[in-house]
Amino acid sequence: MSRHLASAGVVIDLKRDAAGWRLTVLAKDRPNLFSSIAGTISAFGVNILKAEAFANRNADILDTFVFEDPLRNLDLNPSEVERLKATLERVILGRTEVRDLLRTRPAPAPPSRGAQVAPAISFDSEASASSTLIQIITADRPGLLYDLSSRMSAAGCNIEVVLIDTEAHKAIDVFYVSADGRKLSLEDQQKLDLALREAL
Image 1 (tube, one colour):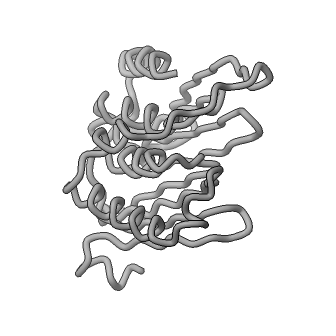
Image 2: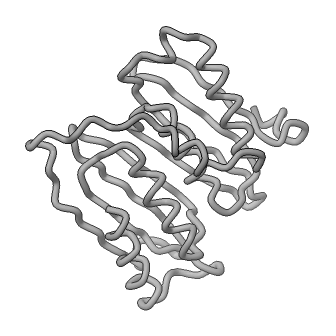
Protein backbone atom coordinates (compact mmCIF):
# COMPACT_ATOMS: atom_id res chain seq x y z
CA MET A 1 0.00 0.00 0.00
CA SER A 2 2.80 2.43 0.87
CA ARG A 3 4.33 2.08 -2.60
CA HIS A 4 1.12 3.52 -4.12
CA LEU A 5 0.70 6.38 -1.62
CA ALA A 6 2.98 8.91 -3.32
CA SER A 7 1.14 8.71 -6.63
CA ALA A 8 -2.42 8.20 -5.36
CA GLY A 9 -2.47 10.44 -2.27
CA VAL A 10 -4.59 7.84 -0.47
CA VAL A 11 -4.70 4.04 -0.47
CA ILE A 12 -7.77 2.19 0.82
CA ASP A 13 -8.28 -1.51 1.47
CA LEU A 14 -11.71 -2.80 2.50
CA LYS A 15 -12.41 -6.47 2.99
CA ARG A 16 -14.68 -8.88 4.84
CA ASP A 17 -13.19 -11.12 7.51
CA ALA A 18 -14.30 -13.13 10.53
CA ALA A 19 -14.50 -10.03 12.75
CA GLY A 20 -16.69 -8.12 10.29
CA TRP A 21 -15.50 -5.54 7.76
CA ARG A 22 -11.90 -4.33 8.04
CA LEU A 23 -10.89 -0.98 6.57
CA THR A 24 -7.25 0.07 6.23
CA VAL A 25 -6.37 3.60 5.12
CA LEU A 26 -2.95 5.00 4.28
CA ALA A 27 -2.83 8.75 3.60
CA LYS A 28 -1.06 12.00 4.37
CA ASP A 29 -2.10 13.47 7.70
CA ARG A 30 -4.14 16.64 7.96
CA PRO A 31 -6.42 18.24 10.59
CA ASN A 32 -9.71 16.39 11.14
CA LEU A 33 -8.61 13.41 9.06
CA PHE A 34 -9.37 10.69 11.61
CA SER A 35 -12.78 12.13 12.48
CA SER A 36 -13.57 12.54 8.78
CA ILE A 37 -12.87 8.86 8.13
CA ALA A 38 -14.90 7.79 11.16
CA GLY A 39 -17.78 10.05 10.14
CA THR A 40 -17.79 8.72 6.57
CA ILE A 41 -18.03 5.13 7.78
CA SER A 42 -20.84 6.06 10.18
CA ALA A 43 -22.74 7.77 7.38
CA PHE A 44 -23.16 4.34 5.76
CA GLY A 45 -25.10 3.07 8.80
CA VAL A 46 -22.41 0.72 10.12
CA ASN A 47 -21.20 0.24 13.70
CA ILE A 48 -17.49 0.78 14.40
CA LEU A 49 -16.24 -1.93 16.77
CA LYS A 50 -12.51 -1.23 16.85
CA ALA A 51 -10.17 1.41 15.50
CA GLU A 52 -6.49 2.15 15.59
CA ALA A 53 -4.75 5.21 14.19
CA PHE A 54 -1.06 5.99 13.97
CA ALA A 55 1.06 8.67 12.30
CA ASN A 56 4.79 8.70 11.61
CA ARG A 57 7.30 11.56 11.39
CA ASN A 58 6.67 11.90 7.66
CA ALA A 59 2.98 12.69 8.41
CA ASP A 60 1.83 9.40 6.91
CA ILE A 61 -1.16 7.93 8.73
CA LEU A 62 -2.21 4.33 9.02
CA ASP A 63 -5.78 3.96 10.26
CA THR A 64 -7.61 0.67 10.66
CA PHE A 65 -11.29 0.22 11.48
CA VAL A 66 -13.27 -2.92 12.16
CA PHE A 67 -17.01 -2.46 11.79
CA GLU A 68 -20.21 -4.44 11.49
CA ASP A 69 -22.90 -3.85 8.90
CA PRO A 70 -26.15 -4.74 10.73
CA LEU A 71 -28.36 -4.19 7.67
CA ARG A 72 -25.94 -6.16 5.44
CA ASN A 73 -25.92 -3.41 2.83
CA LEU A 74 -22.32 -4.14 1.87
CA ASP A 75 -22.85 -7.90 1.73
CA LEU A 76 -25.98 -7.71 -0.38
CA ASN A 77 -24.91 -4.84 -2.63
CA PRO A 78 -21.32 -5.17 -3.90
CA SER A 79 -21.63 -1.75 -5.54
CA GLU A 80 -21.97 -0.24 -2.02
CA VAL A 81 -18.47 -1.48 -1.18
CA GLU A 82 -17.06 0.47 -4.12
CA ARG A 83 -19.23 3.48 -3.26
CA LEU A 84 -17.91 3.49 0.31
CA LYS A 85 -14.30 3.31 -0.91
CA ALA A 86 -14.89 6.08 -3.46
CA THR A 87 -16.62 8.26 -0.86
CA LEU A 88 -13.76 7.73 1.61
CA GLU A 89 -11.25 8.74 -1.04
CA ARG A 90 -13.15 11.96 -1.83
CA VAL A 91 -13.44 12.83 1.87
CA ILE A 92 -9.78 12.11 2.61
CA LEU A 93 -8.66 14.21 -0.37
CA GLY A 94 -10.93 17.06 0.75
CA ARG A 95 -13.36 16.85 -2.17
CA THR A 96 -16.44 15.95 -0.07
CA GLU A 97 -17.54 17.32 3.31
CA VAL A 98 -18.27 14.63 5.87
CA ARG A 99 -20.98 16.83 7.45
CA ASP A 100 -22.99 16.56 4.25
CA LEU A 101 -22.78 12.76 4.40
CA LEU A 102 -23.87 12.61 8.03
CA ARG A 103 -27.12 14.43 7.27
CA THR A 104 -28.33 11.32 5.44
CA ARG A 105 -27.07 8.80 8.00
CA PRO A 106 -29.72 6.18 8.85
CA ALA A 107 -31.45 6.83 12.15
CA PRO A 108 -30.06 4.62 14.95
CA ALA A 109 -32.22 2.24 16.90
CA PRO A 110 -32.98 3.54 20.40
CA PRO A 111 -30.74 2.04 23.10
CA SER A 112 -32.14 -0.60 25.42
CA ARG A 113 -32.32 -0.05 29.15
CA GLY A 114 -29.38 -2.39 29.63
CA ALA A 115 -27.25 -0.22 27.35
CA GLN A 116 -26.94 2.64 29.84
CA VAL A 117 -23.31 3.37 30.74
CA ALA A 118 -22.36 6.38 32.84
CA PRO A 119 -19.81 8.42 30.85
CA ALA A 120 -16.32 8.78 32.32
CA ILE A 121 -13.47 10.92 30.97
CA SER A 122 -9.93 10.92 32.35
CA PHE A 123 -6.75 12.74 31.33
CA ASP A 124 -3.21 11.47 31.98
CA SER A 125 -0.17 13.57 31.05
CA GLU A 126 2.31 11.09 32.51
CA ALA A 127 1.50 8.12 30.26
CA SER A 128 3.48 9.50 27.30
CA ALA A 129 6.56 11.65 26.86
CA SER A 130 4.95 13.89 24.24
CA SER A 131 1.15 13.50 24.43
CA THR A 132 -1.75 13.57 26.85
CA LEU A 133 -3.72 10.35 27.14
CA ILE A 134 -7.50 10.73 27.18
CA GLN A 135 -9.63 7.73 28.10
CA ILE A 136 -13.37 7.85 27.51
CA ILE A 137 -15.79 5.17 28.63
CA THR A 138 -19.41 5.63 27.64
CA ALA A 139 -22.43 3.99 26.05
CA ASP A 140 -21.77 3.16 22.44
CA ARG A 141 -23.90 4.79 19.74
CA PRO A 142 -23.67 5.52 16.02
CA GLY A 143 -21.39 8.45 15.23
CA LEU A 144 -19.75 8.47 18.68
CA LEU A 145 -16.17 8.24 17.41
CA TYR A 146 -16.77 11.03 14.89
CA ASP A 147 -18.36 13.27 17.53
CA LEU A 148 -15.50 12.80 19.99
CA SER A 149 -12.62 13.10 17.54
CA SER A 150 -14.12 16.13 15.76
CA ARG A 151 -14.45 17.94 19.13
CA MET A 152 -10.76 17.23 19.77
CA SER A 153 -9.79 18.57 16.36
CA ALA A 154 -11.99 21.66 16.83
CA ALA A 155 -10.16 22.32 20.12
CA GLY A 156 -6.85 22.45 18.25
CA CYS A 157 -5.69 19.00 19.29
CA ASN A 158 -3.63 16.73 17.09
CA ILE A 159 -4.64 13.10 17.52
CA GLU A 160 -1.42 11.08 17.57
CA VAL A 161 -2.72 7.60 18.37
CA VAL A 162 -6.23 6.17 18.75
CA LEU A 163 -7.24 2.81 20.23
CA ILE A 164 -10.93 2.07 20.53
CA ASP A 165 -12.84 -1.00 21.52
CA THR A 166 -16.48 -1.87 22.02
CA GLU A 167 -17.70 -4.34 24.64
CA ALA A 168 -21.43 -5.06 24.35
CA HIS A 169 -22.94 -1.55 24.65
CA LYS A 170 -19.83 0.06 26.17
CA ALA A 171 -17.28 2.04 24.16
CA ILE A 172 -13.74 2.28 25.53
CA ASP A 173 -11.82 4.91 23.59
CA VAL A 174 -8.21 5.95 24.19
CA PHE A 175 -6.67 8.94 22.43
CA TYR A 176 -3.13 10.27 22.64
CA VAL A 177 -3.31 13.96 21.74
CA SER A 178 -1.08 17.00 21.67
CA ALA A 179 -1.55 20.72 20.98
CA ASP A 180 1.14 22.72 19.18
CA GLY A 181 3.53 19.79 19.62
CA ARG A 182 3.11 19.66 23.40
CA LYS A 183 1.00 17.90 26.00
CA LEU A 184 -2.30 19.54 26.89
CA SER A 185 -2.14 22.14 29.63
CA LEU A 186 -4.51 21.87 32.57
CA GLU A 187 -6.60 24.67 31.05
CA ASP A 188 -6.71 22.84 27.71
CA GLN A 189 -7.82 19.67 29.49
CA GLN A 190 -10.63 21.46 31.31
CA LYS A 191 -11.95 23.06 28.09
CA LEU A 192 -11.74 19.79 26.19
CA ASP A 193 -13.43 17.91 29.02
CA LEU A 194 -16.45 20.25 28.73
CA ALA A 195 -16.56 19.87 24.93
CA LEU A 196 -16.36 16.08 25.14
CA ARG A 197 -19.09 15.89 27.78
CA GLU A 198 -21.33 17.99 25.52
CA ALA A 199 -20.70 15.48 22.73
CA LEU A 200 -21.52 12.57 25.03
